[in-house]
Image 1 (cartoon, rainbow, N blue to C red):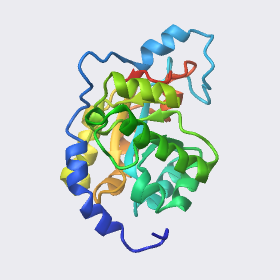
Image 2: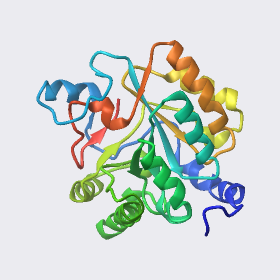
Image 3: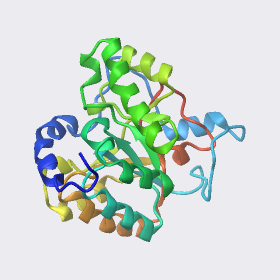
Length: 258
């Protein structure tokens, strides 16, 4: 499907049921799966980590990471305009089928404008329902598609529903992918009320937090300017997920949640 095809609203409606299942409140990891926080891995790295601090050290600053799942979508270019205007970096966990393949120009723009491009599987299958071959296919097909467009291989993934287990961890490690969960979500799949989306995120924001939004729903992108404004007023600095961990580098296979 071409980049400029007028199918965004149709796709958005068609994926509503999928996303309603995918974004059930907070992440639910597989039984016995250990999660690590950004603060703990920064502390373990000390001054010897290989991650880029950039313009801010999140051990000192009040950092927060803005992340978007399941795109790119019709509204993603407008979102990128907002982020550029506000000088806010973000992390995009992209879906392969019907998204990365349908909107390669947008994927390339995300990368070119300094945002982190990450993996959200090929078709949003729940990875814990699949065998190892199925898990590998869901992740590797999206890896390959993103590399073909951007020239760079993602190092982060977000499992649908936040569900992971030993097999998902093993395959993620094999593919060089760290598993990134979240601390705040607006349940934006369930409402078009941008004011409510903004309120939910601002209320749940915390230092070292990872915000989960979806750039495929009507109410989400219009909520972003207010979210940015209010969190900046509260002293937050926006960073990408890798910057949140610096000078540490998230390790492939590990599961991270604030």
